[in-house]
Image 1 (tube, one colour):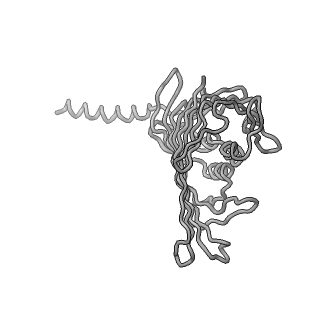
Image 2 (cartoon, rainbow, N blue to C red; image 1 turned 30 degrees about the horizontal axis):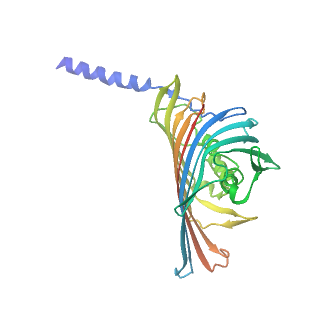
Image 3 (cartoon, rainbow, N blue to C red; image 1 turned 30 degrees about the vertical axis):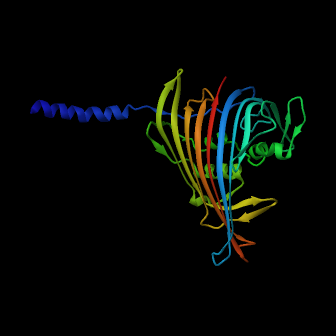
Length: 297
């Protein structure tokens, strides 16, 4: 009996010591710089639903569109200042296609190298050794480079904890930074005080002598307005944006090796022609799923 009690007491002492010894990690995700090359695979699919109703909830129009696109390319950053987006880069595509409502078409730059260059605050695209890409040929590139001020890698930086964290530990990112990053990256204006943002280091492991791990990020945004041409469209307060991200990759900043999934739901509700003189209600819901994988050659 005494021996059992002694062992139990020792056990109570040992467990806290082991828990305290658990290592905390300063999380860093490498941001590719000038001269860096990455091998990238990504795929996106989305469902957009638009419903127009009168003020008595009678549906006037209801439509949906499904879209998907996939790309595999080798990207080299030719010019980039620290902390800024790349000013020049090139991508050699082995796959580039787009699917709209079930019909898949290869994009004009599949199997070619695209040069991307920033000019007068806007990105232009051309085929290496060929002509400029514009219009329908450049829709996805224009969406990626010109409709956002931040790329996904830069946005994730705002979620990283300011202090070291342990495996299984959660944290709350700096809400002001997350709001700014979201607004810069999407053009949405948000009700900053309603933002919910959380992060969690779900597990860690070693690979090739580097720290790897899995991070889960969750974001809930209440949009206030969104860009519509040269103006802004007011959004009703019941609108929501919910984003869940899972990242698996190098977390010590030594290599730009990472894969991830992003699931998002955007529900934007607006009164037309204006909230002050409404004649119709427009509900836009976009559900999207994306996968991304980047590795160093």
